[in-house]
Length: 252
Image 1 (cartoon, rainbow, N blue to C red):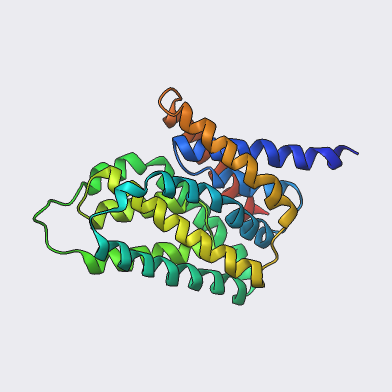
Image 2: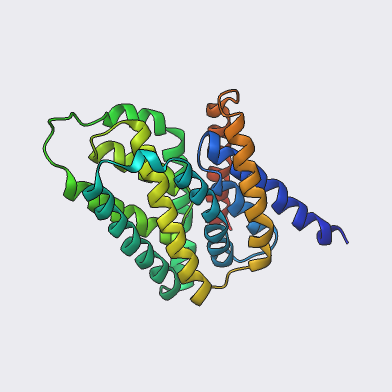
């Protein structure tokens, strides 16, 4: 009787918190993954279900920031192509590689996500913003987005953190426009994973139906109060949870 209502309530609450944290600090998907594991899902099912459920949040963000995408069509087309191909490749690797590879790699990917979340502001300052007259970094940018998208297709946790780090390193533009491009590329990656996983992956669609509306509502609420909430506190909460999940999966 307890599990009959506990699991739906857990997913609804975590979905809302994930959306809110994504709006304020990023990395909310790292909360959903352990929650899905807690319901008894195998890691592979939890991963693909989490990736599918996070998609609508990227759609809303991309639509809201679409005006900031104008002015660099070549960059937009190249990075979009890289995100599409990379995400598809990551999905295929997830499905064709043995399950023991996923079990071995995911703790490291979660740990990497936790590190990037913990030090994302430091990394941004360290990387800096390329000068307007810096050499063309198109190849670096395209390859970086391609590799990040492979990661996102294979394991989607903290994909947006990795994308923005690459954009800050390799692109010359304002943070506002780079953030808009990050949302656009995240939306493309989510669309690809949705199509691929819907066709060949063991998605738990009931969990997706519970997560999507609450994630959207959480994102809306988080966006409204983003200026008032302590973003760093939320970020480090996600870091602690992600690190705990990584350690648990290594020891399990």
